[in-house]
Image (tube, rainbow, N blue to C red; front, side, top):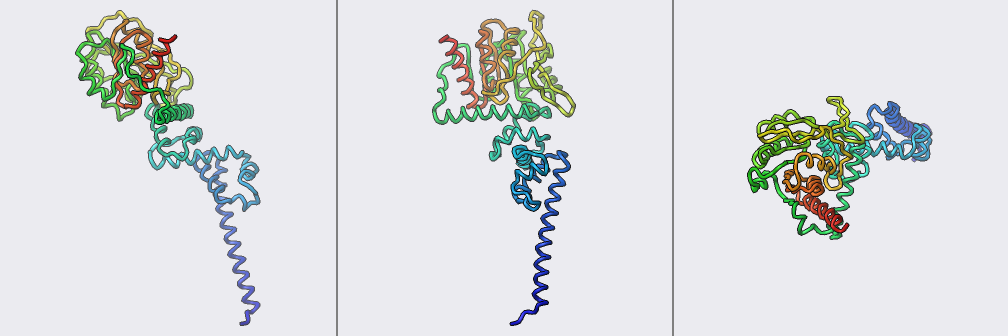
Length: 377
């Protein structure tokens, strides 16, 4: 069969046009991604996703670049590590956007979560943790600390699973009692008018507001006449919390815990948050024999034993201001045992409730380790 020269030429032209069209299409695609990058960091997620597409599609080769690294450096003045930071941050936002409404608002915030990349559960856990504690005041620094502290907790849990962790002490110092369970149930065993001070740090998120009425009722029953409720609180729902406490106890003072180091940042309202409210209430009758400073300095909180852990020093100061040696302090939200340790150091008795059995065991280990160290010099 003879093929005409004209037919052969037409086929060649068609193939050439097809190749050219494909090439033009790729160049147009590349141009679109590059236009996104040229807009800068208007949205860092777009930049990261554009870089990812260019890398994975090897689109940089269409402009004669041999490698993605060379492309980033010569086209954008961007080092390879920086490009991968942008890609990683965009990936974190993409992961979170499928699970929560609020996602990191800056590339720095998202970047601090990249050590957890590939573990969606961990990413979600840390992001929710910092949002529950700081709300809109979340910063890259707070996320970084949460990631580091989570790594410490995971390491400790793995050691425990491998039976390498010190066993939970069978007995604690006689003045310290740590019970596992819900404070609404455990509190029923306490005698009326038996506690000198309730010190506690409940969770701050909106979903936990329902705990404050139960806390107030428990404190009103178990505090001795003239006893104290001293509680840390978040700012966002402070009016509701204070109104709840005032239904059962008498308002005494509003103090503040000053955080040294990096401050949180709120956007609605726009505030650099440097202090945490300390709510001071009393059970009648009220006298005025206890001097204290209403601005308490605090070093960075310790998150090793609990994701919301606070420093021991300010708790010990408050315990010493409002109680005497041998007095009983109750912490219905003990967490990692900060209040128990402060009481042990100050020579006070303490009963702590913790609903999470693993966290309660960590608190027992913490108290046991400290007590052993002190006893053995």
